[in-house]
Amino acid sequence: MKNSAHISNLTRRFLESSSESRLFCEGVQDSFYGTIPNSLSQEHCHKLEELPISEAATIGLVTGAAIFGIRSIVCYQRVEFGLLALEQLITNASKTKYLSCGLQTCPFLLRMVIGRGWGQGPCHSQSFEGIWSSIPGIDVYMPATSSDYTAIFNKLETTDSPILSLEHRWTHLTNVDTTVGCQFINSVVTVVSSSYNSIIATKVAVYLAHNGINIDVVHLLSPSDTLDRVRTSVAKTGRLITMDIGTVRQGLGGELIAQLAELGAEYQVPPVRLGCPFEPASASPEEAFLHFASAESLLNALCDLLPSSSSQINNARKELASDAGGTASDTPSSSYLGPF
Image (cartoon, rainbow, N blue to C red; front, side, top):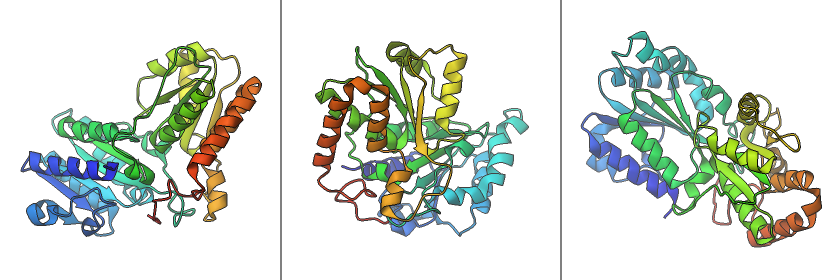
């Protein structure tokens, strides 16, 4: 089963859990990439609302509804659409609890999809996690696995704050039994990642282990996750690579390195930040591949940090390429039909 089917089941459970639950979506009938059960339109039609293209009005609506006890899920086809709702998110939704001294709460889940690859180009390949995570009063998550999505939906049932789920489109296609993150006693590098990058980094770690090199991969579900695991790993390895979904400049990797510096982290070599350059992604598949952090860029960074192990790293590179079986660079697998 894919994550999309798992999210669909979580959505059904949420809507059946309470009479005061609602789902608002831009594209209810399209099933939002397979993450909304088609049968819901018949069983719970009174709880489903097709959204007009008016994101600010939508967040104003669910903020007001939340104050009166209605928990909602809102689905935007792309992260960029959420930019039109920033004023409502910043001024009202994030501050409701604080403006009312805790007497009013504002629980809802805003799901926004991160695009990449075929059909996305410069307008629909952005994540803006730096923007969302800079808003106090909002919980931001960047899921990769089925357990991540389960944690987000469980949080929705108990939270009193808005939740943003930044969902990389390719994580919807991942199998539910996929796990991310790994740690070894004798690891020589720490890699910190989130979202789809954690899937990439974990796969690289598996191939490297086959070639005698162990690395720690620390998956962060949220930018606000505790740094204990990262700090412990870096103390062991003395080497750090961060992998941002978005831009390196003012990215989450830079913030993480700054926080580690405040905690007194020490390195054998300077930390390395991987992510997007400070420019929009190209619509060209080949150029788009080079724009994002990837298995290739991670392996290149590892060669720089571990020059004496370059032959083993390059062996892992060849094995990865061989197992990819010629899959196009702007698709996650040969079964991906895109563009969305």
